[in-house]
Image (tube, rainbow, N blue to C red; front, top):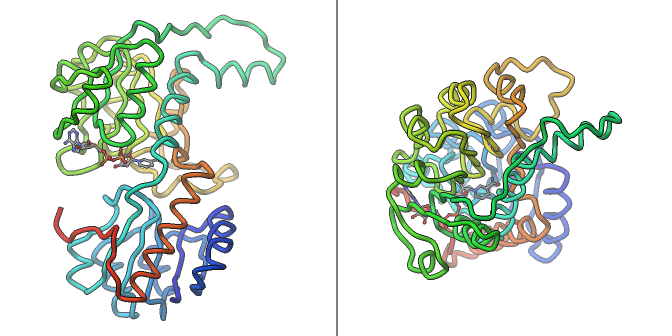
Length: 332
Ligand code: NAD
């Protein structure tokens, strides 16, 4: 099936090309994000494949439908970037990748936490300059500390298990508590109790109306002073301006993020030779106790391999008219 693949990086193209040798679809790759301006590139493609920062709103879906697109396949677990009701209204089915290595994201969250707490990125930058000074690199033992996990699903539960292995007390908050979390040694509490007690808070819930800015000025004011916040889930879970204020006062002791509310116009591109006009991200990266990565937590061979495989299987199923296993419902 002819498929327009948007936001296709070199690694996407290489892995898709390899896996598609068997599936035999006609894949057309575009480095561009899907937007109203680039949507016309998908003319004549019954399937369109997108990623997290592509614009898949009512306007774009209308344009795609008018050009004959009938399937949108997102190479992600999260689907907050897709207007599923609008897709249903114009007769477009939407699929995602429900399951791909949750270890990729959980392990990355641990990596961010260690890099921030133990100042590993800072130290590495120093030694490249011939500076072997240790002042300013003090961290704290994770062993014996309390770690709060908001969202204890596939990724959050693996993160929790790793933290238990470090010898941490692990608290969880989830609107749908999982017995396995308690069986492994976690304890569920309300979100207020979780942030008040935790030295580290890690976000692993999806972005929904209920979780948008779940970390806001009010919640930050009630966190344990000097706590570290890790967000590998979705940028809009955190009110970034409120986080900056909390960093300035020391209420927040550190921030490690792989996702950013306004990431769509920044991430997945090399802007190193341009003037970045987003003052918020520039302020964030100026803090010594902030680490920002560009939405790379999923980027392991295992995860990408599964993403590519599942996406091609979904396109094949759609072409053959068989059941779409990873379909996103029109209403949540
Ligand atoms: P999951 O569905 O297995 O787990 C999500 C958990 O959040 C569930 O237990 C759910 O009950 C809970 N939850 C939902 N709404 C909640 C609320 N209002 N309050 C508290 N808990 C709530 O999902 P997952 O596979 O663990 O992925 C979690 C998120 O990670 C995804 O939604 C996505 O946004 C993000 N993610 C990021 C990357 C990356 O590269 N940075 C990659 C994959 C996924």
